[in-house]
Structure formats: structure tokens, C-alpha cells
Image (tube, one colour):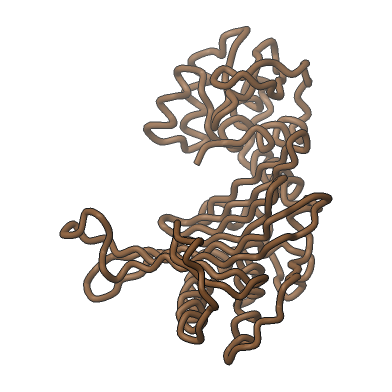
Length: 318
């Protein structure tokens, strides 16, 4: 997954590295955080890795870092070209440069770094549902599932008091956690993933959303279920629409342009209209059948994200 600029910055501040003025990233023309350790300079690329410059890191230190940080090919190979793709990798390297390395120290630093990353007001805010007036059978169940889906995508929301989280270091080898925060452009994201399972929360200038992608097997075909629940923002953060998107996609080599069983359904909770992807101009009042379709795939997505991701992060069953 790589390392975000925010993760790099928090990791280096947690370690206590010397902060230098921000510099231009090596891949994008944006200013990125920059630090120095024993004369070696480290700055973010602007994409998903850290760049080394200045005093060259001794090859024996690099080799030990790759082994201790358990960096495997291809990312471990990239170390030799001055590219680092993980929090564990950068913390191990700078600790070795200063002869401070111990496995216990790195675990403590990683744990502190992730606790700081997750201690973010945007991530910890409660879910709000501004539009809940649709009067159809099953709507109460639908709204409850939407709330549960949001709380599973972002289990760190302040309303999730029922979750007793493990220390981050206890689940980071099982669940990939990626956090981005950029106050300059109002962007925050949290991604939790494990193999083909992904839960993503994003809050930006235009909207915030809760998104899941899970694999399922049906009728002998490998398929994917994507649920995206987004809140569209207007002026002054005012919510102007709330939409649920369902994408059920069958992976079958016999169909190159979409399978007959594919579903691309969108429902607005503000207007009560439903439509197929790219066909909003043909929107019609949502039907009970469409609500039930959404309910069935929400249940599948919630169950799989709970079992594959969130259950690995908490001390109690969810």
C-alpha cells in the first residue's frame, strides 16, 4: 500500500527526528515534509514512498534494515534505490543510523505513531443521517444497516464505544491501516484492508463517504460487492444529498462488457429516486424491491468486513 505523507510526518515526529523546511516531492510538484537523521535527509515523494538524499546510508545499515523490517521483494529491493514504503521501514532505518535499534523500541514507536494517526477529530466524528423520511416497508431496517455499515467502515467513530480496540501493533501485521490528513485542502481518509477486502472512509471539500469492497462467490463465479454511501456537500458544509451506490460485478471471462447479473444501483435518500449508473436522468421513485436488494448486499458487506477486518482489531466479538 505504501506510506502516506501524513504517516511519514507523524512517524518521524514520534521518533524525534530533526525537522527541516518542507521541500518539493520527487514525483509531484507539491511541498512535502522533510527530516534529517545523522546527515541523511528523508522526504516524502508526494506519492506513496519516502526518498533518501544527502549523506549516503551505509550499505550494511541498509541490508540490516531490510532484514529487520521484513521488507520483501519488490519493496525491499527499492531500499537500495533510496525508496522506503512503510512506517516500519523508515523507523527501523533511522534507529539503526543512530545505533538505537531494538525490536521493542520499533514496536513502541509504531504503536505510538498509529495511535496518533487515529486520534483525529474527523475520523472520530459521529455518523449523521440528514435524510430519513422515505416511507416504504423495510426502511427502518435499511437505515439501521446503513448506520452499521458506516460504523464498520470507520470503527473509530466516537459512537463506537462498544468496540474495545487492541493496541495497533497487535493487528498491523494482519490488517493494513492507511491514514491521510491534509488540512490545506480539507482531506482526511482512513483505509482498512486485508487481501481483497477493503473499507474506506473519506471526508473532503465535496463530500464524505463510507465505502466497502468485498469478494463473494456465487453460481461458481467470483464476484465483487461495492457499497458507497456518500453525503454531498454544498456551501458551508451543508448536506445537499445523500446517496447509496451498489455495484455488484460478476467476474467471468465469457463476458467482456459486463455480466447480465451485474447491478449498478443508486438511491438518493433525499429525493427517494433510484437509477442505474450513468442514467440519473432516467431516475424513478425507489421501489420496495430495490430497497430489499440494497439490504441484502449491505448485510453481506457488513458481515464480511466485520469478520475479515474489524474482528482482528478488537478484543471482543463484533
